[in-house]
Image (cartoon, rainbow, N blue to C red; front, side):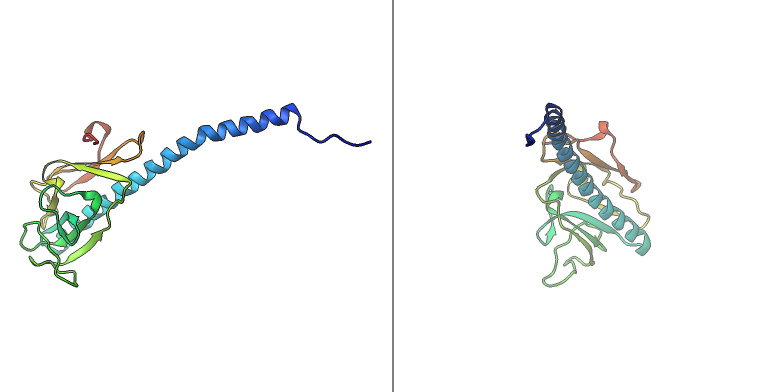
Length: 183
C-alpha cells in the first residue's frame, strides 16, 4: 500500500503561526537595532567629552572638543554628526586648524583624538555654545559651555537619546523631558 504525502491541517496552521509571529517581530527587531546604533553614537560623543575633561584635569591645561569640518573646528554651529576633534587648547579659544601632515593645531596644542562622525544614521541637535564646542579647564569645569545635545535617528519611530552638560563639567544622559526637538 502506498502512502499519501502531504501536510495535515495542524502542520499548516503551525507554519502559518510561526510565519505570522516572525513578520510581527521583524519591525520591532529593526527598531531595536536602530535604537542601539543611536545609543552607540551617543556613547562615542560621551567618551570624547569625558576624555577631554580628564585630560584637562590631568595636565592642568584647557582641553576642547569641537564639531569638526574636515581638518578644523567648525566656525559657526557645527555638525557633530560629521565628527569632532579633542585637542589641547593652550590659548583657551576652542580653535584648532590642523597643520599639514600632523596632529598639531596652528593655534598650539595637540589633537588627542579624532571623532569619525556618525555617518548617515544620526542627526545631532545641540543648544548654546555646545552646538559648536565645549572647553574644559584644569578643574574639569565647562563654564559657559553647558547645554543639551540630542541624538535623533534618521529612522522613524526610534526614540531620541541625549546628553546634558553642566557648567561644573558633569555630563549625564538626558531624561525624556530634556530632549531638544528633532528635525
